[in-house]
Image (cartoon, rainbow, N blue to C red; front, side, top):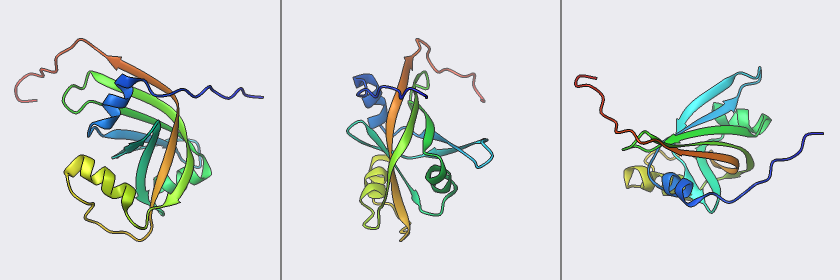
Length: 145
């Protein structure tokens, strides 16, 4: 029998990073066990992450079959501040009134989501482990790169 990981509240520095308009890379598992990674917008609801998508998307199909996820989030302005998350989808619910996708859209582009899709859903992710890192580097790539 596998012991279930203890869930804990998100630390303040993790919540701060996740509350800003930073993109996440969401990893789901394909039927053959290989990973599929997709950049996504997300929102926060307490200690849960909310990812919106259409019901027929690959990530939705993958997560209905296997709810385990991995996410990587870096700060848009300081890529040396990051969090790695492991968790699972605990709920998939319709978002036909676009409440979740519009909240995420306002976070990222300052307006309601322009593409209305009647099959919109929101996936509620429970974080099982979050590893936060802030390295003491300044992002200064050479000119022309």
